[in-house]
Image 1 (cartoon, one colour):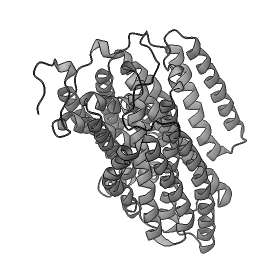
Image 2: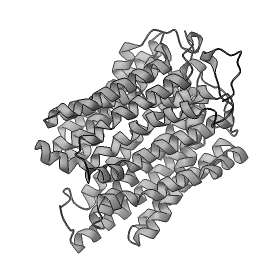
Image 3: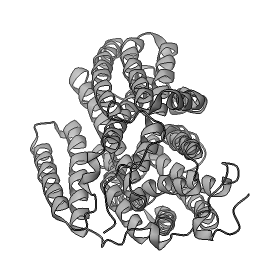
Image 4: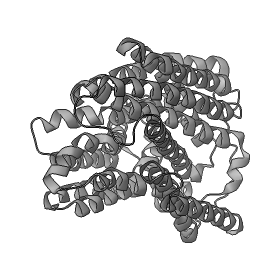
Length: 490
């Protein structure tokens, strides 16, 4: 490793990805364990239900509690990191994540497991935006930052996709508790790597503003109620009292949040940053990519395991084209960004997303090969839009607001994930059946399911295409994004 010896430790940067392998590996590991925990337990829900005597609704909250606290606290965690120190908050998050994971050995009821998952979501929220923010601290060079962000996204998305496969494979040999226990040593290794390789926080790189507690509370309420409303719509119906109250509550809390942030002398999220087309467009485009990713992942899990009757392990392996393409698409995405700039590259990515979803509307009835081709095209779009927008958004933020920038990026993705899952769940329930039968499906039900999928993916193609294109059109033409953020550090 070569670093300038005259630089203090707090300003250490690295000349290459290889030189930064310790901190980069640690940050990737932290991001991986946080992402894989999103989906790892999904494959174990039937086993957990038998062991703890859980009903369907209770099992839904085993995964929902994590997503709700995680999504709701992202902006708050990013804001705290910009004030208290990014490395410090990440190390605390890793410690809490690891220690809470050990507590699964004491769980003997569904309520306790739901509470534990909610706590893990809080810890993960303290990790997610900061891992990406700290990547930018490792390198001064723009190209290195983009490559490092590529590595982070590939690792994170691999964790999201591999969760069911890893969980299904592990369950063949160990109890479901081990799926959480393994988090503890991973978190410890990541914490050691961050402590050794990531520069300490400098006071001048942080904002001196006081923490905006009312803004934090309102943001948690807004995002939490919005995500819950989407889940409730699928479970209880879109016109049910629970869903209606959640939607109205999210709108009211959101309006109160905007009003407070505009009046606050030290807002948690300076709304003036959205005057930047880069910040606004990157956030919108990221939402579109996550709608596509979550919609396809959720839909194909049902497709492979129910319509095809595949085992969880085989269904997990069927998603490998996504991971393989994430790896091999890197040169293409970088070439697009360097040759045409962010705007055109993201427009190409948006076209790939919309085209792949439209292709799935045809391909679901034409076998796995057709689906795999659509996966590849979709992943090229995901890889291009997600990396460019993540880099562009953080680069457009003021230096002392990078964590809130990555938190905004992650929040947009989390909202997109909730929307994508809700769209697929709602349309399958409306077009096929509200209850998926256990065991082998009848031929009529499989045909009905394929019909529902065709309509669902066609709708997703239009929605994602419009959202991702609208976001891409506001980006800059250059791959080197200038800082357009107008936030101040007080």
